[in-house]
Structure formats: C-alpha cells, structure tokens
Length: 82
Image (cartoon, rainbow, N blue to C red; front, side, top):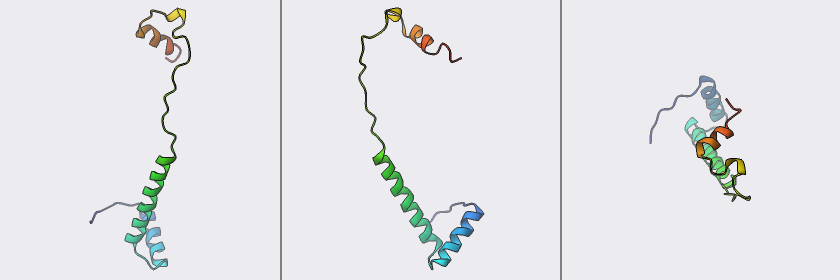
C-alpha cells in the first residue's frame, strides 16, 4: 500500500544516509522502524501491571459522615484544593 508521510528534513536526511550506508532503502528502514516500535509497544503492554481492585478494609464512614450525602463528602475531600 502506498502512503505519504511528512518527516522533519533532518530526520529524512539522516535516514537516507543510513539506508545508503547499509545498501538498503528508505522504505526498508521505515518498515524496520515501525516493526520495532510496534513490537516494543506490545511488549510494554504485556509488562504493565494489571489493574487490581483492592477491597476496602475498614468500618465504613466515620461518625462525622454517617448519613451524609455525597455532596457533603465530596466537599470535604476537595476542601483545601481550591
């Protein structure tokens, strides 16, 4: 498939120089770079720790908030944060 991409001039010139030096093509270098980038991203996703739900350990709301509505609790959470 053909596509058009825009690259910074410096990156394009350095890439062409590497391709010439390695007796390759710019197309091959771009393909290799994309393969490496996609592989690394897939590897990073696998290494990322899965989200684990930690159940609450406690006795629930303090006496101060027993029976309080969400608005009161929210206001207290954000009280000193502007």
